Length: 341
Image (cartoon, rainbow, N blue to C red; front, side, top):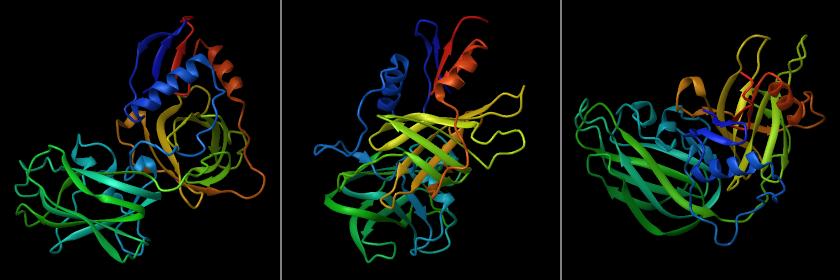
């Protein structure tokens, strides 16, 4: 949901669970004041803070096979950053003595620790919680796999810290559930976080044209601020590029809001997203709709598009002015109300 501001920047309400707290604070300050001259976040500093490298919103992708070819939508709940509902857990059917899922991180990280939250489904399915879990890392999607840590977990949702020696330059992780607490039909684990810092400094910019999941996307980055549009090739009414994205870059991730505008008289659809830039220079993203609650696990990926863009984005100032003329405007996750209504 957008942040609501009245005329004169009086804060009415604030709520947007998808953004990191630091990103939301910076978004409010940067955009409300319109001071957009800060330099781009080109590379993490030497003392870069730890991040959860396994988050979907940081570009990590789960796969069900060791070849890294079959994306696993079922496993997205394990690393979505949420534990507040069954749809946010990893709960596969128990077909063998163990089960595993492989993750490719957006870029190599030096890993330092992990944290596990067990299942909250014991009441309905006794013994479903994970009892023994092993983390492994490999140089590629097929391994060879080396042990990172093995942990025995109690029942309950209390976060369990997992320690291991600092392990540098990790791009691929495998999560192996070895044993549950006795349920013969299902495995279950609520959330897994693996922390570390990017292994190498690198430039991260989102400028340019992208061939993406929902049509072509054109982005422009100015300091930390990113604006753009997306859509298919222009139709008879010229609506291509009328759907917009805007937000900020925080720790190398583009967090923002999307708006899809339809025919005259229909309310636009809105939501939030996060794009990470992989080592291959591709977009690895997730999104969700405000109308559908907190879920932000739908995929939104992209690769650089060669040649001249086929869609044209209107200038952000033009669209803002158009909406303000009607009395209010949604601006990069902030709703400014002119008080005319």
